[in-house]
Amino acid sequence: MSLSKTLLMMMVCMTTLKAEEPKGWLWYQDPALPKGVPKKEKKKPETGFSLPQKPLTATERLEEQKAAFEEAKALAILEPTLENVDRARQFHEFIISQATDFQESWMLSEHLDQNMERIQTSPGALEITKDLEERGLDEALRALSQEYGLIYVFREDCPYCHKFAPLVSKFAGKYGFELEGLSAGTGCFEGMNCSQNVKALQVLNPQGEYPILYLVHPRSNEVIPLSRGYASWSDLLENVKIVLKMLDQDKKESR
Image (tube, rainbow, N blue to C red; front, side, top):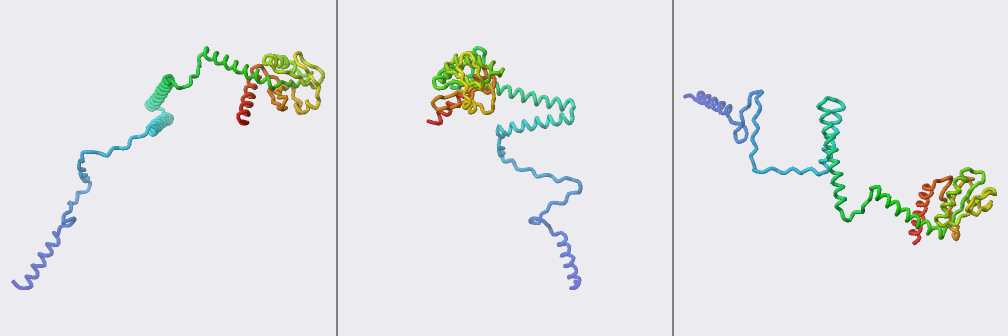
């Protein structure tokens, strides 16, 4: 064989080898799949265990429940088909039932708690509570009357003054308050001593409002309004409760 033929044969062999040279990692490569054929996913090896997911907190569960109900309700409003409305209604009934169970359990827990202060709500219990409160208020007012007196500022031609005067006299007599009337004229009412002191009237009633009932401490000249204008018996007692709390708070702060 001639040298030229030998070189030609070598070139042909080398070309053939180059065309068939393997590719890829370690001369391996998956053959190309035809178009349209999905690749097979490699199956993950089974390890025998799975990582546990973090459980939802109670707050997160409640928020998910709330969000699900709101979504069902919104869908029922926008698309009020029987199926959507029924699903929203069932969500609502479930939440109401859940709240009822919670309330009943709460009440049972309170009932079984030996250290919890009981609040009586029956008519008989409320009547007893009211009676005890009134007794306590009576005692507080009688104690107050030992240090304070009442001044009733009125005007003779004032119809409200005439209507309020008997109630003021009754209040003073029941709790033992010394009662003085301060008149803008010359008249007076039964059950009280009256005076016509212009300077005192200007100090206690510069706006000229009638009637006014004041609680007065003679030694310190402290003056506290109990009522401006006509007040019923219950209104007067409610005002007194407020004044008693104020005086009690002042005593605590001065200690």
